[in-house]
Image 1 (tube, one colour):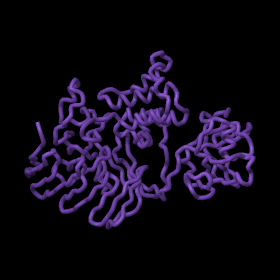
Image 2 (cartoon, helix red, strand yellow):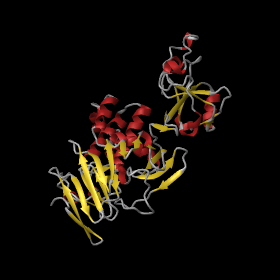
Image 3 (cartoon, one colour):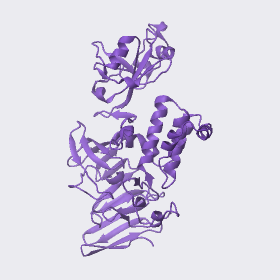
Image 4 (cartoon, helix red, strand yellow):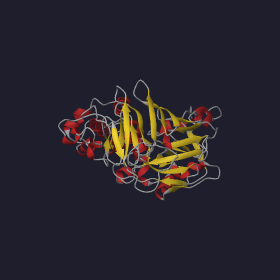
Length: 429
């Protein structure tokens, strides 16, 4: 078994040429003419299809006859130099990382894209704003195939056939019959697995579980349950056909073997380092932000940040600290009321009243804290001194009121009411 070197589509024969490292370098036949160039690591850096040349840099930058497309965190796309559709757009992905919705910088819908399970086009033409489509991979519609071919890094893939046109050089699990078909996509289970490198599949559900674990650690600190759950989910992601390890751990939190196993995981940095060794685990938050069809547990998880239309990044979670029953009553009523002079809030979570008072330079010791989603107020979030992430420029009142604390906590201000919920309120110690 090897590479597909000839295809006949609609009676037209096409020839596919590969280099000595099994990389597709040329396609010819009929009206199709294409060539591809790769770097020393096997990454495609240049492609010419039907006379149009595109240069690719790390999946973040594309150059095409003077026009440029740039990709940013949060799904932002900036296009410049094209004949039309220039500006900032946002690609919203489904749980498999497929580009399913494209909106402009004002949030106006540009295109909906629908896929069959193996990635075929299910409804209407694909948008030309980006060629990153099924599972976020580059799609070359001009190549011979029912709908062209997808570039999956190590191999090329035909979404209509649901098969790669090259054999996998790895057999991830010889004991699994589904893994023995080296042309199959994602163990023939495309609704659960993706194949980001062309060499091995990964479980979207395990990535979502990893995101839940990381979110839990960030919100509540590292403990036995979420620590071992994260380790188990990383292991599930790395091992074919093994999934849901973290769920099993959470169900057995009080078992002695669980406690013993997690004793070695005593620092968040060690856990996160383990996650980063798994392919695509760093994208867990991005997956989670668009996985609202996977149940209430997943819907509760938020991304790390939001991106405003002007490209400004805003942390996804804010915190308000105060004292007294009036504050608790407001939380129980579902919203912190707006104030004419504005309402300060932080992007830092504190468990200690003394620390919150000192870092946020409060004139009183707060009794309660509440966390909230910043998306409802994202258009009305302001930085007092106009510079994100630099506390000395945010609220430099320590010189005038040294008794209020040394400062150093990040703060912002809003003039809008803040939606909150009772289950996100906690009492400071």
